Length: 393
Ligand SMILES: [Mg+2]
Image (cartoon, rainbow, N blue to C red; front, side):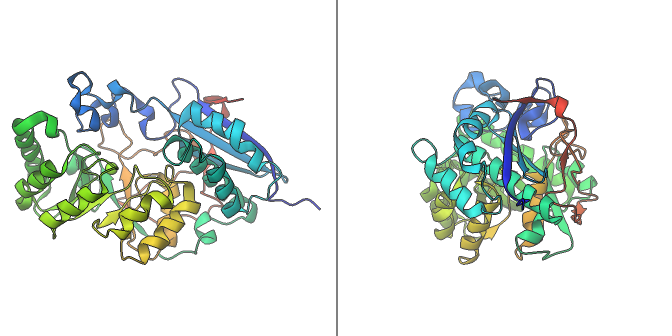
């Protein structure tokens, strides 16, 4: 008898040039995510200061993984890492998948992680593992006819509340989101004048939305401890709801110093950390108010669930970074906060568009800042058009 969960084939794709789909940085020139002044680690170099696209934030592109089971069901997931990640899946990870039972997510994850340890551990390799893991969960859900949230603990809440990341807090408020997260424009390399411009920008954002609407600030790994302490002090009257990713992912001790300086201000980080091993100290130090793993980067749903379990034992809140429906299924299944990030996908950051562009059919969008996740099988999404994709052999 055929086992409907047995993996028969794995196919990997990147997007053809000009396709209007993919992950966060698909849009390229003209999109606020890559094309506006956002403080970032490359601000040390004036020639790369103005646009994150100038130093290659979007260079890797997207990866699409399809896993087909013996009964012809296809699980699919989008991920980051483009051609290099696709090559890894095709030429290294394929052997651990073909013929395997797709329900064996723990063992498959462990084999991919251990087999890639000599070159992996973080970053690109874990992007590739994440995409495979999410495609497996999608496949299992589709074979069973169940949404992924039912496979990972069931429905813990009927509705998800969203905040939105965009450079325009007032536009976010007008769209019905409960809060707005804006990117910090300048960093330590922009000196005292840059610090004053940061305070002026945040003052303007606060004035536009009123005193009580939650306003968060994303610093994209670009500050150092003294600057972060000074900036938080200078913005005390602006009632910043949290400061995100103020330090390099390597400076875990730095968060302790910042928290000592500002015990009642909230700090968050984690979107550029990888696996439960990377999150171990972020959780156990207990200096962060929220950790923010990205399910498409951190190791997929299998690893996110482990990180959440670890964090819950330390009373550290987990709210995933972006990641669209993959995060919505996680949030729906969890008993922690029922809110989630939506990264404004439109070029001007002022309207709601699918996180993955036109890549999928079935991607649910927040309505008036809220969502009740459907019970469509898997992650509820199907590839819209294979003509957008270039297969990687
Ligand atoms: Mg962020």
